[in-house]
Image 1: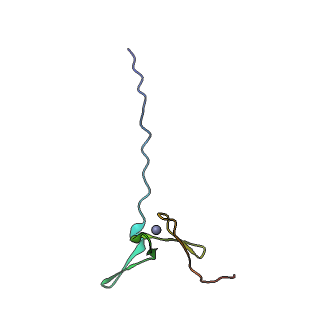
Image 2: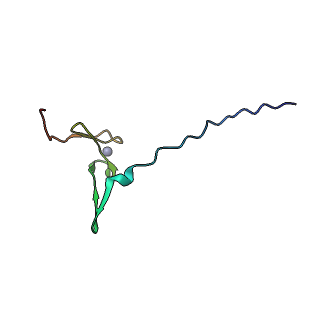
Image 3: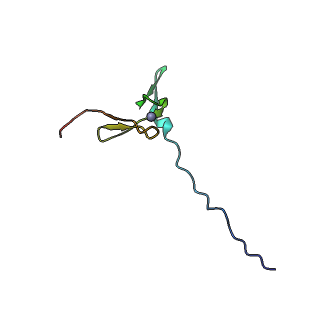
Amino acid sequence: MAKEKKKGKKPHKNKPTSKKYAKYKIEGDTVKRERFCPRCGPGVFLMISQGRAYCGKCHYSEFTSKKANE
Ligand SMILES: [Zn+2]
């Protein structure tokens, strides 16, 4: 009986490391955080891109009007 070994499992892939630590910056004795979601609360950060802040969890979006016209 020649048993063929079939792998039912998918090959393990390394997950990308969480970049949450990058959102925290320690300055002196205080911890500085980046913008977090007002709906989800601190801990859920907003993705900031192209003048917009977006929450991937609750889809909250906010416009960070820096330069409206460029
Ligand atoms: Zn949110």
